[in-house]
Image 1 (cartoon, rainbow, N blue to C red):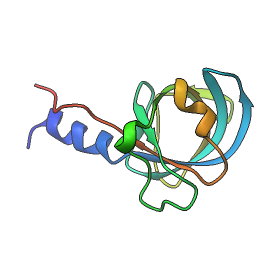
Image 2 (cartoon, one colour):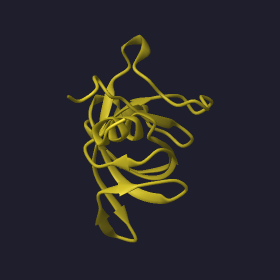
Image 3 (cartoon, one colour):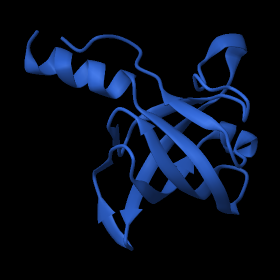
Image 4 (tube, rainbow, N blue to C red):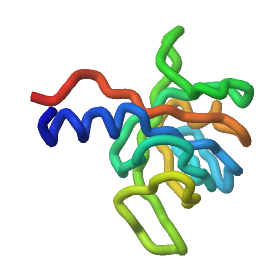
Length: 114
């Protein structure tokens, strides 16, 4: 397995659990989250699960995707967060209205990079 394939696998299992939604408008939300799987990176896209879904979200049923715009740890911007750390994040997209405490969002990867 080469570096690109390992990076793909790391990104595909990235999960965040929403602890709280601090601010929200129609297209963006600022949330406090805990990383519960993989390495979560700025720019990743996520499917939204439900608060009682322990496996995390996906795109089944046409659920909207959200994107990770930025991550703050101790009020400083970082490129990634890994388990079991918490962070403040900015999420964007049509699915932000679905975010609530306890929701797990799971990274979505379209295809393996070449």
